[in-house]
Length: 220
Image 1 (cartoon, helix red, strand yellow):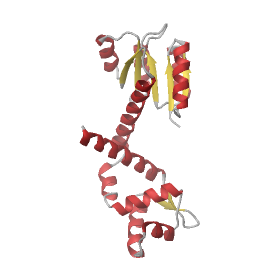
Image 2 (cartoon, helix red, strand yellow):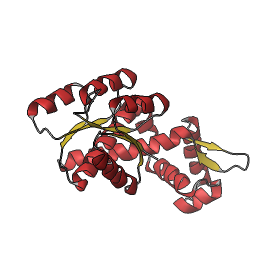
Image 3 (cartoon, one colour):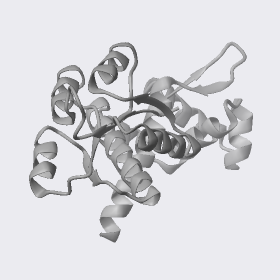
Image 4 (cartoon, helix red, strand yellow):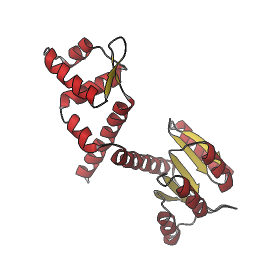
């Protein structure tokens, strides 16, 4: 589950946002001050931080700097009641992924969260995978279908894969399965059931992110 930390000294707003995000399927940790947020960061990894710009004690920008020291690529959305260009520029220079102003609509908040998380996934794909190798291996549509079916079913035997893809040429199927295993996208257990490896799961997720990115670029 995606972990989000909401950092804001306004308890009512903090709890309301946490409730909205929880209902949207996210795991939410709350912090009322920057110092409390640092304590959470010392013991837990987060996928995204929502951070109030103006807080007593450690300010949002000061906390942003501390976050960058620990996690340079951590996505952060700054929240402020002061809708000024200067504040926005300062937050972005510190590395904020997005900037929203109070009061904000729930749909605008969720849209920002979704967009920032999607960008983070795209950046992760670009830095963690050898895309040339991945794209070369998955350039064949049959291999993409094999991975998708194995993921959907949680594991499949050789003949089950052949039936699902309606492929009677077993030599051809063995060839593609061999490539996927050599790429460490698939493995077999003791019962000869094909399973996705952790790398295979990551690759499928990244492929979906890349396809969304390409589709959006085409529309734009």
